[in-house]
Amino acid sequence: MISLVLSCWIGLLVPLPQSNQSVIPAGLIPAGFLLQGWSLATDQSVILESPILGHRSIPLLRPLHLSSPSSALILRAELKSKGIELKPIRKGLARGPHWATTDPDSEPPLARYQIRVIALQHLDPEPICQLLREDARKREQEIGALDRYSRFVADPRTGSVVISCTSPRRLEQYLKLVSAADCPPVAGTHRPVLRNWATRFGRAKELALELDRAWEERGGQSIHVVTHQASNSLMIRVPKHLWPAVEKLLDELDRPS
Image (cartoon, rainbow, N blue to C red):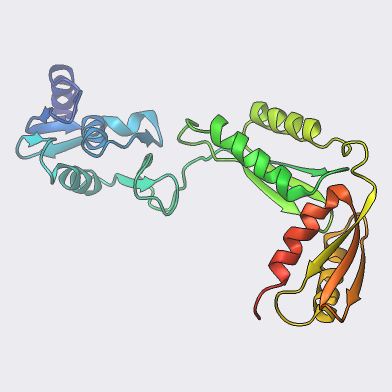
């Protein structure tokens, strides 16, 4: 009872650390003060698993200058001595927001993903994914500590884009962007054109088989490939708006084995 009263009394008298130049005095200090000090010393935010976690009293034997290079290590050790663990919220990233918990096995309550699968009608999924990633890079520059970055995956087999997003508002914006971008090709570009590809490595016949197989797995509108043995090249009949995707696929296939 005496320690609780003393802790509350010190909590009222000791000012909460405001900068990395602050000093935490010796005595029985509430854990919340030490957590705030660690945050200032490391320039990383801390989220508590419960509001009462910061009420725990921790004895500090000597004053601690937050500007000291070892202050963050000392604070972490003092907190751990009272069963308070500091864990990175984003796994694999030592720097960034941290989770203060009394349960070493607990996980931060990260936002849950909502998943949408959008079948495209006119465009390839990978360029759409690139467009979405660029848009998300701008929208998600300052998301909350417990939020998650959106994910965009192209599924060439079904011609679909898979969107994983935690925010209904952001998800709505991404769906609108897909809807606006997935328009019919410009008039005239849907007509077939004949393109030539001079094989750079190997034989044109083998490359043609690989191209047919890869394009069939991709799904969507078919193309017609003819091998020209004399020039070791391919003659490809393809809708004009699909040629960039065929060219990209050929560039990936026509490489040294």
